[in-house]
Amino acid sequence: MTHAIQSNLVKLGGHLARAAVLSQNPRINRFQRFNWGHVRRLTTMSSQIPLSSDFLFRQMFDPTSCTYTYLLADTESKEAVLIDPVLEQVDRDAGVVRDLGLSLKFVMNTHMHADHITGTGLLKKKVPGCKSLISEASGAMADVHVEPGEEVKFGQHKLEVRSTPGHTSGCVTYVCHEQGIAFTGDTILIRGCGRTDFQEGDPAVLYKSVYEQIFSLPDNFKLYPAHDYKGLMVTTVEEEKKLNPRLTKSLDQFIEIMNNLNLPYPKKIDVAVPANRVCGIQDDN
Ligand SMILES: N[C@@H](CCC(=O)N[C@@H](CSS)C(=O)NCC(=O)O)C(=O)O
Ligand SMILES: [Fe+2]
Image (cartoon, rainbow, N blue to C red; front, top):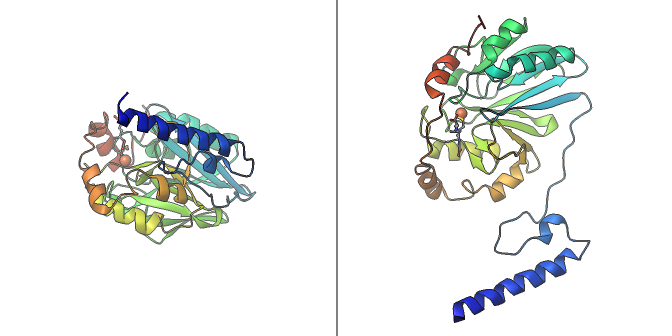
């Protein structure tokens, strides 16, 4: 056995012994228990913010595009909003709205999606009275165009519009301060971020958006992205500040990473972007 192998075995033995001791100590939480020093982990966690009792929150998933759609409502007034719906899930979404007796006020998007056709246009047909909403900067058609700093109100609740370009030039993040939650679209994903190689994407702009508009929120705010490809559902500002493998790097390193992702283009980009520019498909005939 070489000296290097012997030395690595000794180090590994040390780690295992330390982990065994720590795992016996009930006062050490589950994050600290597996902190082996060289591995980045949370050692403390900020207190959790519960949703208020009149705030309805539903996270729904489209398995084909791995997109999350969010239904939020004020349970007193019944006013609701739907964020980032997917065309193929329109009947599901309209069914939940109907079953819960909600009044859908806005069907809104975080950006002009490239990987799927939005359900917005068709939902407007199926759920009379609702209005489409997207940022002015997206360049997409909608009933309501929002600007940074504006608020989207439903019942007693509201979402602040924050401009977070970089994945696309029109990306926004919707922040519900009173509930401690934010809907980040593709700006930040769980342990990742949106790609920057099409739709006016720009890694330096995305980095600035994340640091100035998302990482400036309180550590315990929960972040809900538009996609996850690994089965994760939610993260926090604190987790991403400490654990995001791309965004914990310097700006120069981040740009280098983003310029070398070499991801294949989304399969539906050529149909999705033109459709989403006009709010998605308008009827199902
Ligand atoms: N394989 C999918 C597309 C996957 C993809 O490109 N996702 C986008 C978000 S949708 S615009 C992205 O930004 N991914 C970042 C990453 O690191 O994966 C398809 O063909 O539709
Ligand atoms: Fe996207």
